[in-house]
Amino acid sequence: MRFRKLGNTDIDIPVIGQGTWKFGEDPRKERDEVEALRHGIQNGLTLMDTAEEYGDGGAEKLVGRAIHDIRSEVFLVTKVSAKHCSYQGVLRAAEESLDRLRTDYIDLYLQHWPSPQYEVAETMEAMSELVSRGIIKHVGVSNFTLDLMKEAQYHLGEIPLVCNQLAYHLHDRRIEKEILPFSIENSVTIMGYSPFGYAPSKFGNKGFPQVGSPERKILDTIGDNYGVTAYQVAMNWILRQEGIVAIPKAGSIQHIDDNLRALDWELDEADLAKIERCFPLMD
Image (cartoon, rainbow, N blue to C red):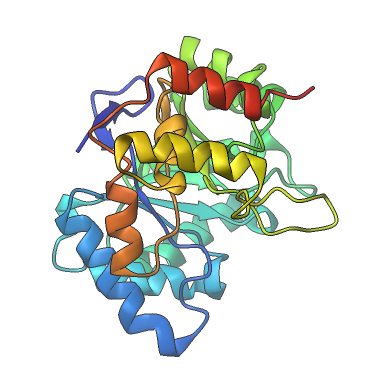
């Protein structure tokens, strides 16, 4: 397993973690989801990401089941909903997450989205209080712009902002313009979610290149050179960047094993150049 430092701390976290979006929504899948989480932990994917919004708390409950007897082996990340970002709301949400996760501390607590109701100052005041109580160890944000990151750090004072969790994949490289350079310079870890893109929507097709498309043929050809799949090429491309870790969702043991095969090799400069031409950074 490869590791990177969390922000400006001395804590090593795996470059690939386990995301749990959509977990806990279907009781028929719960056993497989817990087994996948356990399998990932056993194979070094000890970075666990969840949120109170996932499955209306169901994902946190599943994570709690998966880690209850190995809590110390896991770096646990969860998120407070934007609608709960008042001072008291954050404190209450953290306590409720602790109950669902069956733990007495959270390694990294994130504000899930910028809140239209509550100021960043109020939310970060609550985060600071949670740190002082020992309920959370580190503070981060998710889906924050560069300006909001700076605002959050200002209101945290001496407590470092160690993470911003953002979408990052071949079709969405926007963070490379400002947020990633700032984060590297200021020791803020980027946790990239949706590493294989999103489902097609009104915002356009941001999904993984379909079989037979010119983009997919390039990824498949590159993958053949390394004995891996196009998906593993895409994951390896993400991890080329210092300061980034990826948190793909993996609801099965097979998906976990597939993600692990993105490690222990590196794309060469020629293949990186091919990907750059095929998936350019857009304005």
